[in-house]
Length: 111
Image 1 (tube, one colour):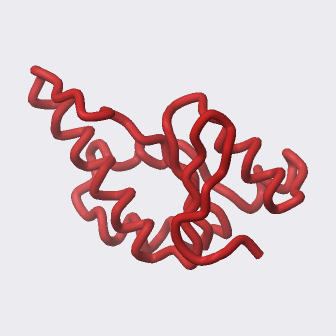
Image 2: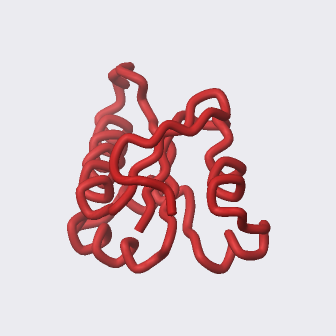
């Protein structure tokens, strides 16, 4: 599995298509994105990470950026999203971070 992460609107899906030479249709069939939203009320993040690892590509947005929200529910959501990303990065063969549209391979290599 290839795990792609980066800030909101940083070009993660476009980078995935360019790196893998996939069309939008292929991406829709072979990848899943916005997975950080699934972490919000998930009682078992390791199980969620294992299920998501069945996709060829998993894309998650980094959220928070060091800002700690006052609202406890928002803090819990951001913590769960971060923990899910850590689990996915651990499971992944390749990890790519996209910033300003530029992909940087952090782990493994792009096939």
